[in-house]
Length: 257
Image 1 (cartoon, one colour):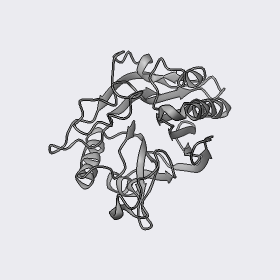
Image 2: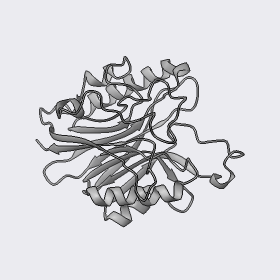
Image 3: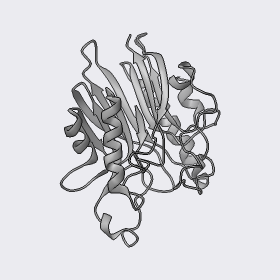
Image 4: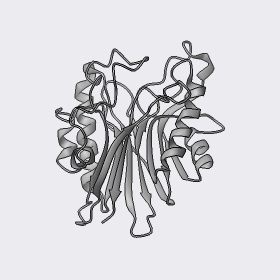
């Protein structure tokens, strides 16, 4: 499962935290990648969700987008924006991989080894550039992710907000080395993970609105062993009248090699 959970943006972010937990508790996923997750000096969303759900957790940051100016959000002073991973199985190791950037800071990608009982596999959690003015960074980042996924020695699952439509130039490098499980699982071709119908839709995201920009991608890691997609669906309906995020989550049922 991959889900951009919208950091602490919006006036109802505390209510959204409860909705995120309720949604995850209902779905009981084995592996979850979260983008726009938060961490403070004393806690993190990853740890809180992991403890509540009985899952192993990891966090890495900072990641995109840049956090708001503290003057605009004084109650979020010192809260980092990054990536989280939740796993049913032990997380054997975690590594931060920096993506290229010319226009602002280099965002983090979280790379972890998951101790699956059959054989270990790699989990990659990431979020890439989105602003049209920084399109060169966007392409450079997906190219770097493709090189990373292609170099991994074990089967891999990439869980990411790639801010790119399925037919975009930015997604092409990753599709050359991995499988889009939504397409393999016969998901609807016009599926949308960032909808303009959302009451707090980011209207400035002109390249992303009303497109599928969140992905679960799989690769063989050069071993010939791979995952097979058995089903896909989207989730993110309101909980208690509040949308948990401005993105819908992508959920994929995978059969191991």
